[in-house]
Each structure stands twice: as C-alpha cells, then as structure tokens.
Amino acid sequence: VSPGGARVFVTGESVGSSGADYVTIAYQARTGAELWIARFDGGTDGTDDSVTAIGVSADGATIFVTGSSGDDHAYATVAYDAATGAQRWVSRYVGPRPGGYFGGPSALGVSPDGSSVFVTGSTSTEPTWSDYTTIAYDSSTGAQRWLQRYNGPLGETDDARALAVTPGGSGVVVTGGITGAGGWNYATVRYDAATGTQEWVRRYDGPNNAPDVATNVGVSPDGS
Image (cartoon, rainbow, N blue to C red; front, top):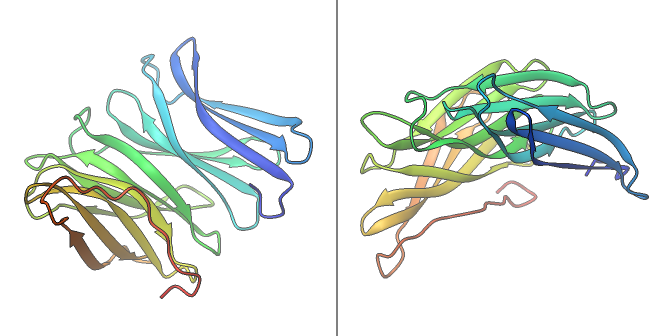
C-alpha cells in the first residue's frame, strides 16, 4: 500500500506467449479502479519468471518487485514509477552456479530513506550446495552496492526466507534455514546496511534435533 494509502499494488505471475511473466497492478485504494498494469518478461528463451516479493519506497514514488527469472535462476529486480507503471530499471544477478537447484530471491526490503533496496534468497554454489545471498541496490539506478553470501557451518543447503530493515536504516536482518545438526536449523544474520559487513549470526536447533526453519522476521520500532 502506498504510504498515503491512496494506492494498492499487487504482484504475481501471469502466463503469456513466452511463459509466465511478472505482472504488477496498481489499484485505487478506495474504489478498486485499475490504474496501470506492468508485465516483465525476463528472458528470450520462453522460460518462466516467478515473482516473490514487492516493496514501496518511503515517498511512495517507486515500486520494487523481485523474483527468479530464466533457466539460470537469476535474481531479477524491477523498479516501476508508482504513478504510471513505467519501468525505471531492471537488475539481474546470476549466482556462481547458474541453473543450479536452488536459486532466486524470497524477500525484499526498502531502506527508510528510500535510497537502497535489499533482496535476499539463495543461490546455488560449488562445492557448497546453496548459500543465503543478500544484495543491496541503489534504488534510483539499480546499481549493485554490495553482495553478501552466508554459508552455514556444514557447507550444505542454506535458504534465506525473510528480510527486515531496521527502522533507523542502519541494519538489514535476514533469516531462514540452513543444514545443521539433525537437519535444518534457524540461521539469522544481521548486516550493516551501508557496507554489507556481517555484524552477527545466531543459529537455533530445536530440542528434538528435528527440522527448524525460520520463515519471517520483524524488528522492534526502536530498532533494539
């Protein structure tokens, strides 16, 4: 929803002539009147594009969507003009092992000042199976500011599921599941929002050594 509450934005997938595309729609919040529709086809090979997350800039001027695009499971993040639906930029990132089993972003966040967009998910790697992969972009141009991967202690499958930006904008927190003792464990990582420097990691293995996977994250209003 736009910060002023005037517009509602929806994103998802729609099958077209070249397979599934990102489709993002803006509606007037009070009446449901359609304001614009934007389609994104990320490739020329007819492969599907699977959108997973949406965000709105603090000033309400820009919409950001992200997902997985093409056979190489690229991160594909797109910025649109919130008033018209015109595409402003597209940024693609292909992981170290294109087309590997794991790939693509799962969550997106925007810095409180609107200057940065953060995307997290996983990319397939060698010899480790997959790592958390978190990227910061310049919100006005789509230029990559930093990229960080997190590889759990066993060096196997690590899959980030959620992201939150601290209210002051100094930190980015991601969480999900990593392969650990007895199966999957929670792993939560905080990065410096400006530099991508890893500030801390905390893991949790439940009492029965059964699979444990975190699926969402929130930060208190005072950022503590």
